[in-house]
Length: 337
Image 1 (cartoon, rainbow, N blue to C red):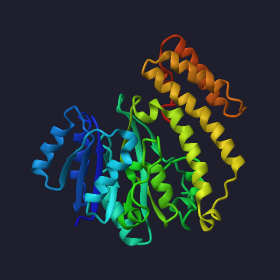
Image 2: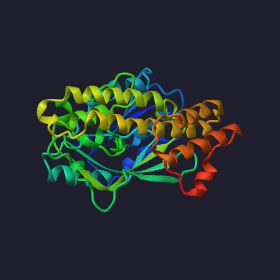
Image 3: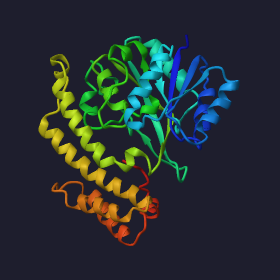
Image 4: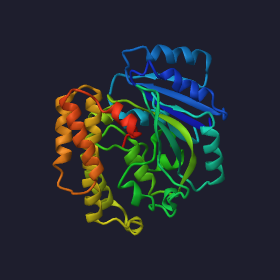
């Protein structure tokens, strides 16, 4: 039985899977198993993983017929079912870890047996430029008390607004994950981390490591970037239903009101439109980008003037079939929201 089971869902990650695996093999904590779950990649991902598995017995390669990212919870739950670790991690095939990630989380989880989930900070970097855009989550000198979710449900006041916990940094206690029925499904939503983390937030405390544990790759053609507006609407609908379903003892921890949620999501829609337009400019989808920027400018809220200015600039760039990256580099605004 390994201490950590690392589940690696992957699809067409031939360019990145080597870095992903190397970051695990290089871990200073060595008691782990790595289960690579290949969703029928037609590229060379499988061949690369099989080569690694020949020399590294802690790596298991599983290939399945393509289910697609919208059934990712099934893929992860299959990996959970064959895994043996006390702690469960997710590392997607295009991301990678810092070498002491597992050691730091082992120390935290072993020292705090009540904790159901441990998480930390991540370098978010561009796949195109290789430059780090930002460190997430952004935190000042004082870590918000709620981030450790004690008492259970306290972090929901933040998580119901924004999913700021980087999934690549998460390690979950197996017993807690199994108690909630494994990885959760949000129908029509490609990621399993949000519904799973929200459910775990009702189970027990979290532990925040205020250190960079991993590296997350940003690509303009990611599903979350291509369908960002549609996914936001699904997330908003899910959050309202999730809050309504909470048991009374957890609802007592919530300080959010419906008007507060609605106001926040109006702002989020505007920001998402601008970010979506930015990625469409990068993909040279100029007509669709202009639609996003126009929708942002037409948002009824009088808030967020800086984002409205960005929408206007994006509209101009879209008219001339240019992206905004050069201007944003000059302005020092390279981060993605």
